[in-house]
Each structure stands twice: as structure tokens, then as C-alpha cells.
Length: 83
Image 1: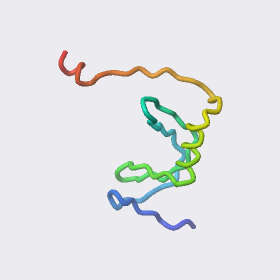
Image 2: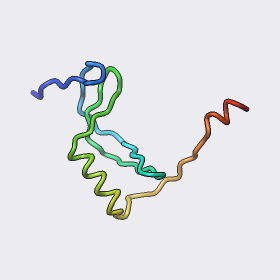
Image 3: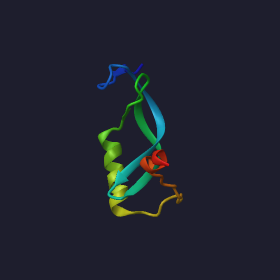
């Protein structure tokens, strides 16, 4: 049995999950699927291991061909609220 991990943000319980993570890098966004992370069941904070973040950084730096591309719409919430 794995030891229970505690969230440093709220004291909640962390659960190991597979997530999709979006990583900003300059003016670009990179989406990583099938990422192993610890997710707080109480506040939702996501904790990534050093190994995981280093692997993401390496992918972003070396730019291997991605599995797929997606277009993402961008909205200004401030402009929408003023209308």
C-alpha cells in the first residue's frame, strides 16, 4: 500500500492520476496527454514530479514532431464583460 500524500496547499489527500497538462512557454502553449500527477482531492492542486517536468522541458526545447495539432480559440474576458 502506498503512503498517503498530503497536499502542501490545503492539507487534503493527494491521489495519483493520469491527466492532460497544459504548459505555457513564452507566448505558446504545449499540451501533454497521459501525464502522471498527484492531484489533491480537496482543492484540485496538481503536483508534477521533477522527472515529469524535466521531460516536458526537454520536449519543448527539442521540438520533436507532436502526435497532433489543435487550434484553440482565445477570448478577452475583459472585453466580453464590457460589451
